[in-house]
Image (cartoon, rainbow, N blue to C red; front, side, top):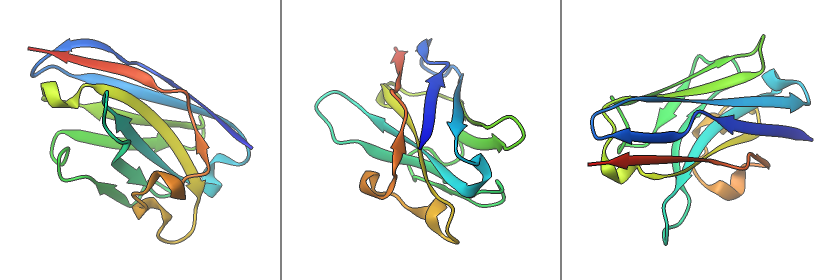
Length: 127
């Protein structure tokens, strides 16, 4: 089992920034690729970004490329999502997720491919 706890959400104005954190516990963190997903009201959960076990490979959704940056610190069992130039359409509950660190699992974009999930943190971008 891997337990994930997100933090760092909040209310921010359009154009602002937020940094989300995800703390992992349980199994060996470096054995897992990590992802961030988001879900807006009335919409399906969508992939935002994935990162491989070492942090050396990432995969971003087109909607966040150039604005969001994922990183991880395996020594601290943490993964981060730096969100800049936020837009109103970024408003959603953001979820951290983990999947076994196979060679290309950081590129998985379907929620069903991820085995472990956090409880989510709300991000609201106001105009």
